[in-house]
Every structure is written in C-alpha cells, then in structure tokens.
Length: 449
Ligand SMILES: Cc1cc2nc3c(=O)[nH]c(=O)nc-3n(C[C@H](O)[C@H](O)[C@H](O)COP(=O)(O)OP(=O)(O)OC[C@H]3O[C@@H](n4cnc5c(N)ncnc54)[C@H](O)[C@@H]3O)c2cc1C
Ligand SMILES: *[C@@H]1O[C@H](CO)[C@@H](O)[C@H](O)[C@H]1NC(C)=O
Ligand SMILES: CC(=O)N[C@H]1CO[C@H](CO)[C@@H](O)[C@@H]1O
Image (cartoon, rainbow, N blue to C red):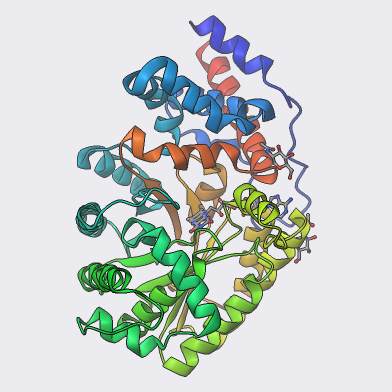
C-alpha cells in the first residue's frame, strides 16, 4: 500500500519545483515556507499530494466530467461515493453533517483562518425543479446562516449564496434579456421583496408568481442574516448574471443602509468586469447603500467560451490569462482606492489564489494606509487549495476566509469537477503547494528515521 503511494508521488509529472527563488523584500508577502504544513497530519499530507498529483495530469483533468459519469455508470452511485469520499471529496469538501462542519470550522479557527460556509446547490438550464425544491433549498440556506454564527469564536462570519438554488435559471435568462432592453427599477424589486404583488413587464403570470416567491425567499434569508452573517452572492454564467445582479442590488438597497451585509461577486475574466465594478460603485452612491464586493477571476471559462462559439457571439471572456490578470488587478485597485476614501461604505474580499495579485493587494493596503484587519479588506481561498498562501496571510495578520463547501457527494460533484479543472495558473500554484508538501513530507521521513 505505502509502496504504491510512494511510486505515485515520484511518478508525478512536473517534478521540478516551479517556485522561483523569492526576490522580494522580506517585508512583502512570501509564500515559500513549507512549515505552513506542519499542522497537517501525515494522512492529510498524503491525501493532498495524491489529489494534486491527479490534478497535474491534463488528460485526466480535461476529461474529469466524463470520467465521473463513466465511474457512476460502472460503480453506481454508492460506488462513486465510496471512491470520492476519502479522496477528492475529503480534500475539497468539509463533510455533510453539522458535526463534521463544526469540526472543520474549529480546526480552521485554531489556525487563525475564518470559515465561509458555502452550500454548493446550483442549477443550470434544463435542471429546473419545482417551487417545493426551492423552498427546501431556502431552509438549507437558513441552516447555513445559523451554523455560520452559532459559534462564539466565528468572528465576523460570512457565507456564500448561489441564487440559482432559489430562483429558476430559466427565469434568470428571461430576466437577463428583458433588463437588457428595459432595466427594472430597483425600488420595484425591493417592494416585491416586501410582499407587494408587483407586475413586472414582460413576464407571464407563471413567471411573475415564481419571481415573487423567489424574492420573498431571498428576503427571508437576508432578514435572518442581517447583523449576524454577511451573505456573499455568487456570480454564475453570463447568460444569467445580469438577473442575479439585479436581485442582489435590490437586496443591497434594502439591507445595506449602514453596513455591507449583502455582497455581489465580480468575475474579472469577463471583458466587461471593470465597467460592471464601476457601475456598481456609482449605483451604491446614487442609491445610498454600502457595497460589498467579492472579486474573483471566474470559474466557468470553458463553458462560457464553448457556448459563445456555438451561438456565434463574441467571447465574453478575456482572450488571454494576461488580460484577465490586468483586469483583476485594475478592479482591485479601483476598490482599494474607494475603500481608502470611505472605508465604512465599501468592503472587498480578494478571492484569489494568485500570489502576485495577493501581494499587490498587500502592497496597496499598506500604501493607502488601510487597516489590515479593519474589516474593509479581507482575503479568500477555497478549502483544500493553496493552504500555504492562506496560512501565511493569517500569520501576517490579515483577515482570511476559507470557502468551506459542504453537502452530499452527489450534490458536490459539479463543484469538484470545477476544482479539478481550475486552469493553468491555479495548477501552477498547486504545483508549488505540492512541492512544499513534498518538502514537509521528506522532513518528517528524515525525522522519523
Ligand atoms: C472565496 C471564493 C469565492 C469564489 N466565488 C466564485 C464565484 O462566485 N463565481 C465564480 O465564477 N468563481 C468563484 N470563485 C472561483 C474563482 O473564480 C476561481 O477560484 C478562480 O478563477 C481561480 O483564480 P485565481 O485568481 O485563484 O487563480 P489564477 O491562477 O491567477 O487564475 C486562473 C483563472 O484565470 C482565468 N484564466 C485562465 N486562463 C485564461 C485564459 N486563457 N484567458 C482568460 N482567462 C483565463 C480563469 O478565470 C482561471 O480560473 C471563488 C473563489 C474563491 C476563493
Ligand atoms: C499581472 O498584472 C500586473 C499589473 O496589472 C502586472 O504588473 C504583472 O506583470 C502581471 N503579471 C503577469 C504574469 O503578466
Ligand atoms: C487542466 C488544464 O490545463 N486545462 C486547460 C486549461 O486551459 C488550456 C488553454 O487555455 C487548455 O489547453 C487546457 O486543457
């Protein structure tokens, strides 16, 4: 057993360390310290190495979705679950029961990291389920609010929310086309959240009823979380994001009078990301609400591109990684400037694993004199990814959240597929993490022999 694990580790492609020797001053953030992994148990080290090793075979990763469905056919649901549970699932997902989640949160807290719970229930077109299912999802989200602030040690808790768990993707697409022609008034959406029977132009009777139900569900979640847990709404596909933003902005208008309890997400791989961020800033000033921004590069690149090509539209995603990088850093600077001027009105979470962007944020925070742990700026990474970056940030005194997804194996498969497919540079980051893991692994072998 051990023998084969060793073989696997040494057989890994890309053996050469990718981490360049750091040439930045010691005051700046350096992420090259394998001691970040001292806190991991031996089996955790092995599991992380195994999973990252798997992720460094492009052939496996690119066909990951297919492999999953083949395995499901061959092994059945239970078999697939048995295969994934101790490996990929254990690496990227906290678990299913409340005690598993609490254990993961406690462990994180002991390392100086904060947990941001995420329920990865989501729907895409053609997967729509009835009102009943959406109501069940709402109860799951309310549970998530409760768990997020149930522990006295969870400081300034946050959670993620996928709107397509509460609002049908078909309606999101319809709304997206409608508001492109004739934008809806935010006040009207807020009134609908308050229970008024608003008649939205362009929607038929059935769509209107569903929209009103969805808005009331969102209102319930927001009311349960305000003053307790910050709710970060996820960005999804471009063919529904405008609808998601409309609803999120209405929630902000209603609940963010004095502080940012509801946040929106901006995906910088989109060509329009910078103008979306500027527009959000303008809207928050005009409407007088506080703006919370989750800044990400974006997780749906392959599908966005395939779809645009199929429909003969221009690609909404930047042509190269370098352009996405420029866009990310530009949006980051815009937000940090706004924060340095009025720190009580704006908040940002730098949700990235990219060391360069994180270092840039650290430098700008210092230059602009923004309080490291004042609440206006924090960082975010995914559970199981780039722990060396997260632990370094925590050690340097920044507020750092790990996004902690939980749920059944079945519910988390799409999320797991996206994690494995995380492109190029993330994999380089992972390669570095893997090299650091290896160093720690060897250190322990030496010590024990
Ligand atoms: C706390 C948290 C919350 C998140 N929430 C969301 C969310 O709501 N919605 C969402 O979509 N994602 C979300 N993500 C996922 C996030 O988008 C991915 O983790 C992210 O894309 C990886 O980028 P990076 O900055 O960590 O890494 P990097 O390694 O710097 O960049 C990789 C990213 O660059 C982009 N990219 C890669 N190649 C190209 C190319 N050829 N051309 C153009 N762009 C390219 C892609 O976006 C790719 O994911 C979240 C992540 C975190 C940590
Ligand atoms: C990323 O963007 C920043 C500034 O926007 C730039 O300085 C840096 O060189 C870019 N990194 C890469 C690898 O292109
Ligand atoms: C795992 C991986 O690297 N997947 C894809 C990342 O993006 C490049 C092109 O941008 C593809 O060639 C890879 O297959």
